[in-house]
Image (tube, rainbow, N blue to C red; front, side, top):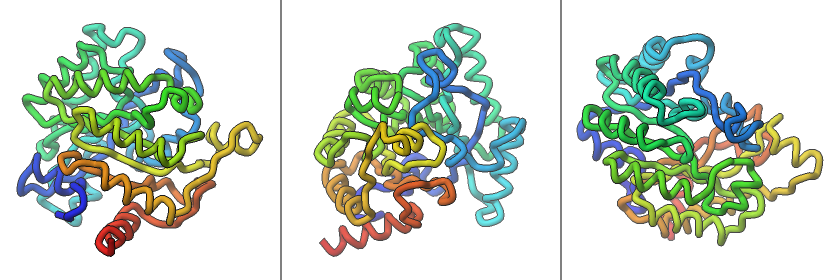
Length: 305
């Protein structure tokens, strides 16, 4: 336990005391309503799913075979480890144009239960968008949560609707608030993703994002700095001169994270501070540092202070 903020290890040990737990990413073949034309096309301007999806999740592998591959990778080091199936790629509650349809909800539940059939999988993490949670899906997740711990990670990214429009996100901050409240009311653990350094956002605005997020009934925050990934719309817009951004220096981002730690209350875990896309794909900023290395730098700075 570090004295400055609740980290992911402390958070997860509260839910699974005395158990070594590891996330296993799962690609269930979902799409995204912001890509397939349901609400938009092209996706978010910064997005490249291949930068954060493990290699074993690609191809035509079933959920069960992906879990077996992930378990094999991690069990070499920790033979007695248990796992959380992390439905990570794209929008993992997106069940088509009629999200409340009984067949669609049942189809989602079958995918989640496929992962839970493995005896070493003891819970679910479901990454999704705030606009993809019908009341029927929330009810299904709530029932599932009574059998296994269910964590939902909402991609909020920012609390400013104008920024959401610029990045082609396709939902509003109000939808984020509504969904976070409905999930929490249903007994589900809620995490929020926020991106620091989005186009047009100042440090003051970023800190306001943190303050607004912490007023919601959430259990965790996932933060990362904006990375420009090659061949994304963001990269193309910057190259063409249609958009200008000023990437953080690592020093400036460290100082920002010190201020963020001061804002976030101890009851909300900060799961991470940094994004870690493959360096070969990162156009800017090129820091050459991993998340845990950055966190160690931050902890040292907090200690010195």
